[in-house]
Image (tube, rainbow, N blue to C red):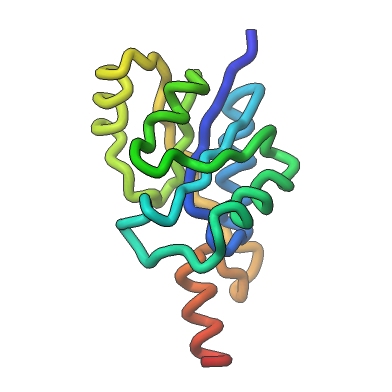
Length: 143
């Protein structure tokens, strides 16, 4: 029996923190599907800079990822219903409310676990594990 895991995120500027999250998510099962958020659904932070298809293609190129897909523009749970996962892996710092997700999954008849990945640790003092920190450094040095 194949254990399917879904991870999701914006993945605007891919960095080692994303790689850590996706590798940990992949270790939670046998197949990892990644739902890449559409710009319209990103309302908890600044809108992504890169187009959704570009972000999906870069995520899809990672070894840990079996398939990256674009999220639904109106209902973020549609791809989850279609994939019917065993586990939804959330990033350690993602804004989602775990209990609200569990409730919505239950209401839709989706039986799966919701787990949080651990935070990645920088390999050195100069490594940035956050898109926000990368953008801030770019603006600081080149802005």
